Length: 339
Image 1 (tube, rainbow, N blue to C red):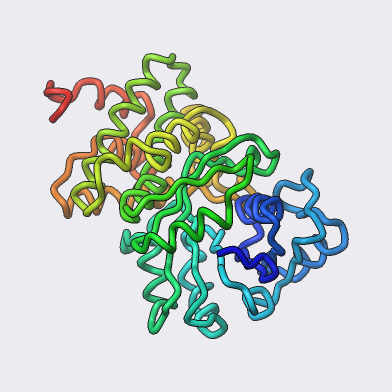
Image 2 (cartoon, rainbow, N blue to C red):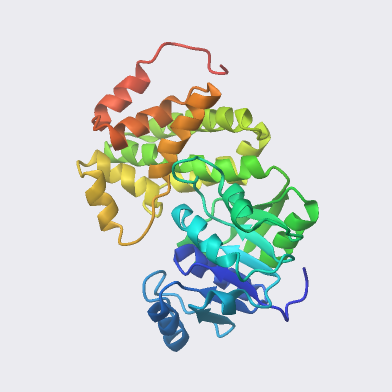
């Protein structure tokens, strides 16, 4: 994909859509940034800033904001979905009426479909995939939006079952500040990006309770083990979870306050209720909350043990105090590390 006279559409003007628009503009593309609310699109056109997300960042003139979905995707070779998981089904239903069969679709959300636990590329394929010649790819990795928008060196991974599709996404997004690798394991890349959010909630709890680096190191290591177990049971390759969309994203998301999921866990440990925490996030989505519920069901169906995921569910939805969830994890039946 080298014809930079054709635009790339970015669907979703939240933090991630805004950051990806900056990456694509830096790569030399004309970008059509779609915002659902006309007032947001108008504000970006006038001020060159997103009034609600990453508002300190100036968007270049090559980023055209619009609230017209047809206008956003018209003539674009690639359509990038930068939406929270719960926005994917309805928006894709709208997109199905204005996409052309040859357009490449890139899903960047890090969650699972609410209720079903399906990967989001599966949802996209169901809604817009009939009769398509263009591929459906995913982009994931340790990519905190504020750092990407600030131009801090970042790496990501593009996954597609078709090598040419992954290579096209790699070529479109790569810049000296945003390095993209390819991977054919779509299942592993998507699940890594979704499941690490559950562990990040646990990391926030650990920090909120005042635990140290020993605690977090154990949490990340055992969290990665259960992510990998479920991923392999669902058809992923184990080595993918040792890569950017697994271990890489896990480290970035568990590290501290820039992560929404870490924030949720931290505030829970400090005594706030989940509804209060989510309300305070002002439109930001912590994907790990609903992903925890979906992953628990998937693990039960697959017969896979995920004790950290179960503990996070107990904390989020059953009112179990943080201290008791930690005690439960620490006093589980002894076992071999590699089991």
